[in-house]
Image 1 (cartoon, rainbow, N blue to C red):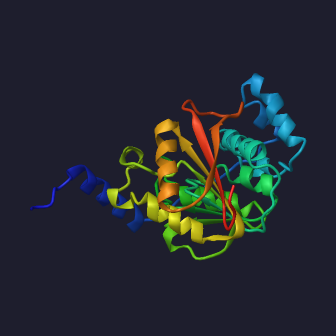
Image 2 (cartoon, one colour):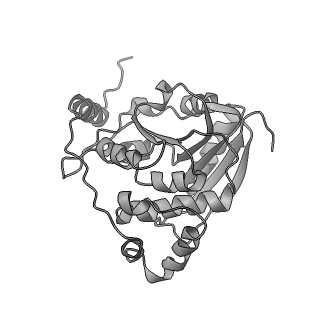
Length: 257
């Protein structure tokens, strides 16, 4: 049988090859903002929640690295970790899979107070400013103690992490297509199994899915990988900038819930 030729996937593959062949970027320039200036980027109703987090976590570096979008996403990530994971109990470093441009890395680092690696497969995606995700991510990571931005496929990572976060893994083809990635990167079970090997004994993995369908798929992949994961149910935060509901899972190496 002749293999089916998918012109759309060929186009995504060509675009992927092109942007990775020319990774050069203009510098990602960030201007410093004061805490009151950052707060004013939020709707008034959300400011008390942000101030409550600031009273409990060290957000002093955020003015150096956060734009309005990164500020909101970092607050959301910090709030989710605070509500659903609690006090960090892992040894550094930690890892975030699929960190895009590193915009919410400040939220991760503020929660744990330790070093983080953010890994992004599509790190050379370019903005209209001629800057890339990688340029922004590296700029943010340099301002946070011990943090790194890794332009890489997570399957190429070898290391040992005490905690791993994974927001919205690609579990079916539609979101992969929406982000313009070739179909060959749709390997959810293999990615999950490899992420599991990166955890130290006792290390934990937090996965956040979008929508009930993806949460059900995630459950199936945990079962196929023979991993025991605790369902966190619907993950809610007053600081969420997202419209669709999100659902969470927490799994721990060498541990049963």
